[in-house]
Length: 252
Image (cartoon, rainbow, N blue to C red; front, side):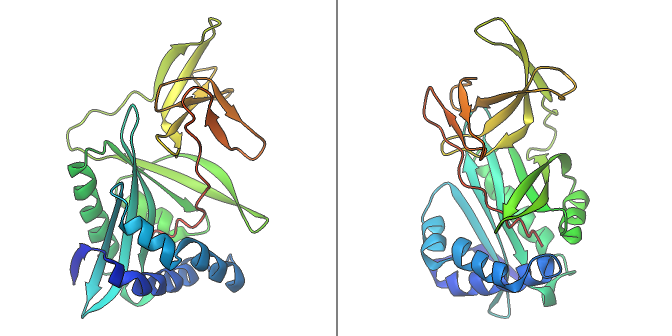
């Protein structure tokens, strides 16, 4: 089994792997129509080609006997800290249990570290028990939950994170800040949402993280961030925006 960077020649194989993996991981919780729609939306040839041509994307594949049997993709987002968002990690059902997912993750981490990434964040639907176990086995820490809608139905998504450099001290979970009007707030660097230019970090009014204040922009550390009822975020200072949610997170 070989690991290598993905190329445009792998696009159809990646689509096949994604389809088989999604069915195996979520077939019990999501109907076939939704899975097919997800493949066409998130794994279209145009979207994959754009990812492969983007220097902020890391995309690797696992190949066994000339056939792609798994892939992993991460997007790099720069700000106060550089975060790699694990968008996808899929292994076809027949090849699971042989360590391919672990090898893909290790290769991805190496490339992210070489790109200066400080932390890797991934999300998985709670229904994917294998995916949750995978994160725990790989030493990720669970830092929260959020709700995501899939074709009008709500699902719980669990958020995991890990530092990428060995020996690096754990970051302070909360950093105290003071707003322009003198209010004491606490920024959580372990709870973030991807943005177009850098992540947004959750901000609380208390150290126990029970009362939310809002969000801080990772580009300029501004607390002047607008949010609407659909949880779209936009920094009113620099224009950094929250990207659309990718709901898949089938990481095995």
